Every structure is written in structure tokens, then in C-alpha cells.
Image 1 (cartoon, rainbow, N blue to C red):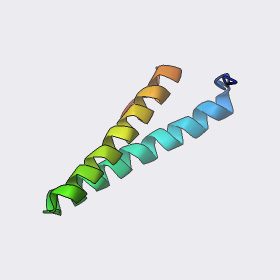
Image 2: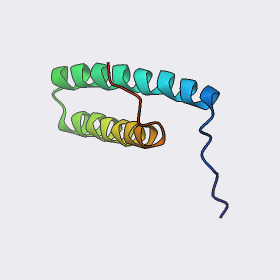
Image 3: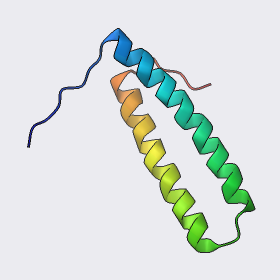
Length: 70
């Protein structure tokens, strides 16, 4: 399997910053949805989505450590 080298150019950084911020907003929105949900299956699904997005944020933070949370 080919391993893709990470693009750490300034353009890539700006794109990742935008994506990172959108993940933060999406996670906050899902947490609000989760508070209103009563079905344990749906709550579990929402939590898995949040976990996946948090992992993506960690990956981006490792690529660009100077990214700050809002």
C-alpha cells in the first residue's frame, strides 16, 4: 500500500485550519443534538461520530501544532 506524504504547505495549512474549525462547530452541534436525543442507539451513533471527528482534530493538530482552538 502506498503511503501518502502529508502536505504541510501554507495552502494545506489554511485548508486544514478551516476544516478544524468546522469540525469544532459540528461537534458542538452534535453534542446539542445528543442532549435532546432519548434513543440510546442514536445517542451511541452520535457519540461515535464525535469520536471520529475528535480523532481527525488530533491528526490535524499533530500536523500543524500551532492551530489553536476557538
